[in-house]
Image (tube, rainbow, N blue to C red; front, side):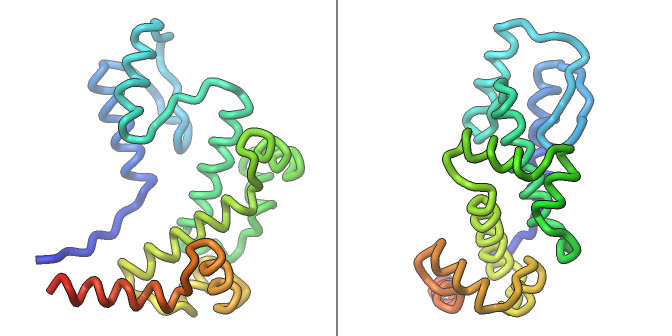
Length: 183
């Protein structure tokens, strides 16, 4: 039996983080996605234990201020890409308003820390979301392009091919073939 499971990455991350913090008897308040405030300071040992518990799952405690801002930018971009209705938002305006900094400043810090641009990160996230939508929802490319705020299917297809090396249609054929082989 094969099941297709739809999931919300924000919810999964929040629940996992909550579980790990509760396992260590830490009292905390969630301030936003990927941001918590502990009720008391951690000892060096407790902080190391937390880092070690989170690390195998791809979580990392960010301590440098610029790195913190870059993580907030990444979280905001992921939030934007996973919104069901992001057609009303221009990414630069969304980021500037959400993070209370000018887009130019955010772009400079992001590039300085990651050696890549915000635009490239947005494209990568949109393509990952497009792949997920093709896998789980079996949406048409037109629907996916509209949902992800692309100007056209051709624009989505070009970015998809530039990012993955294959066209969205080829990706869909591969998925269809794999599903048939699993039957």
